[in-house]
Length: 207
Image (cartoon, rainbow, N blue to C red; front, side, top):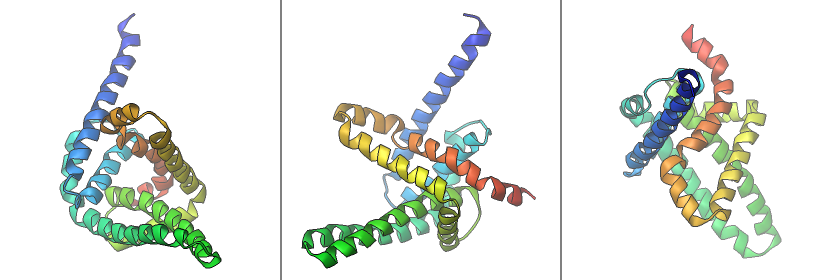
């Protein structure tokens, strides 16, 4: 095998290794819990640059972005965590009531949960890539989710696939997957979608 054929293989292995390291660093930086929003925003920053063809170091810019995104990422996380906690509580409470009214409420809550998830999928990438206030990022996330409903649906279907993997694959495989690629890989999939959504705004920001 000549060097020309070997280099792409070596490069692919090197990329996978770097993503695995990034996944582990991401997990470590999420441990304080309060830094989860900051970590997700910084992870999207790095992966979106890769998706845009701006290859380079992964861990170093990720660690740099942690500091830049701390304020906005933390604030957005607290807002979304609070609203998400209310949704989860109600999703656990209403379905067990067993009447027509509770069934109707449950249906509304499921829709709201999908909206919450969609907004979350846009909010942290927006914080990672653009300068804005947390509330403005959340508002823009809602607007992008509606305007790009096909891409939003694709990301929600990705979530269904990820949940299916965790539920139906052997536990040993899941436990191996999570520390190596359990967070970076889904972000990579979503970034392939988001890079097209963000493209017009990237151009505007550059002008």
